[in-house]
Image (cartoon, rainbow, N blue to C red; front, side):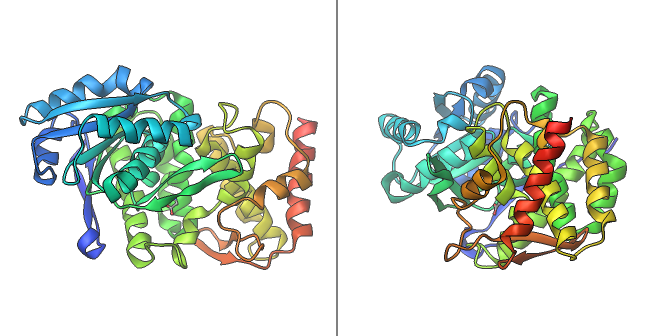
Length: 376
Ligand code: GLY
């Protein structure tokens, strides 16, 4: 089985960096990070779960290259993307005497990457940081592209900054400790890359998905590398999301509203909201007459084959009605002049941004999805 490491370059001029994907990267972290450290010390920001599983391995890897490290450990979960935890991290970095030329290591899933990245963006007006993502979602999406930030009670990711990492190390071995649920939540972001612009990748996933879900490392490396390459292309053409980058939000307008409706809790993980949101976005596209009726069915079939959450019926507990969900969508950061922006599809692999979606069609999608839910 080919488990060769792959490197994807993110070509952003003076902010360019590499994403290295493969096994054993924690053990080699010292040698890989050393070129980016101005002195042989770093501070790691991580969460309690990742610290328990992998912090010792990362610190051993760093120290094998003579790099000493401290750690700031925050509670796991989306709840840590708030002002209080940001203050704790920033003050902790200052207490660890992180200077303007030092680097922070963000070691965890999407929450840690966003939180530690934002702390790095504002600490001493910006210090370097390295992403070592430990969830599938973070490896394929959130660790690449420089979006950092925290949530507001009014909505997700409303406070933040673009701050590109200097290096991303996606250690595929670390994915072995994810629960099946966490892995599948991240898979929503993998399938997104096929659906939004690469029909051949989606076809590949239809065949390879079950194998990579069940632990095939070669398939996992290929899926992560292909997703990251797709993201690198988009980010290099539209770093600050003035156009094409918005496509990466396929499924997110619906998904963010569902996350808000479930209180950013364990009821619905971010990637699960994305998978369900992707299903709704394809349903919306078919209702708008943009794609064939078969297209949403094919998407749903693949999500069902993988066992991901894919319908509102898969969310436990009560949900608000369609109008309340639409109000929550209004808090989405992609709202422009009060108008909701949707990513819709002409076919698998062919998506575009649409700003004039009639809200009665959106309401119809949600009403029917909520009805299907009560029928289950
Ligand atoms: N996760 C979407 C983006 O990075 O633009």
